[in-house]
Length: 108
Image (tube, rainbow, N blue to C red):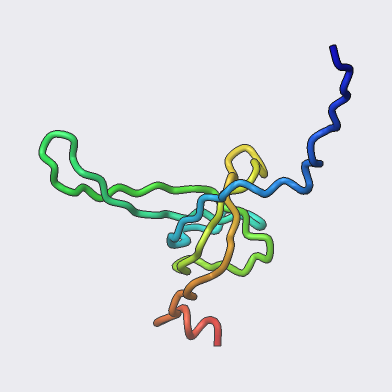
């Protein structure tokens, strides 16, 4: 019988991170400080008829810099739970919303 001692595995910091989910969607609401709601759309086949049906999901997203506005297209990535509902954070803003009409006059 050999009495070998095993060394501990590599520390957790050295382990690679898991692949994070990333999505692209539009900001539909600013719901508080550093929080936004993002809607992303996808298509699925209808279970009986096979026709593609549009679906959408609204997720609560953490916006650390408060730089997203309603109508912006953003890329979001999954993260650890930040609050009761927030499980996503903004990775980058793909396209800012265009300001038209009365809103443009109010900004100027």
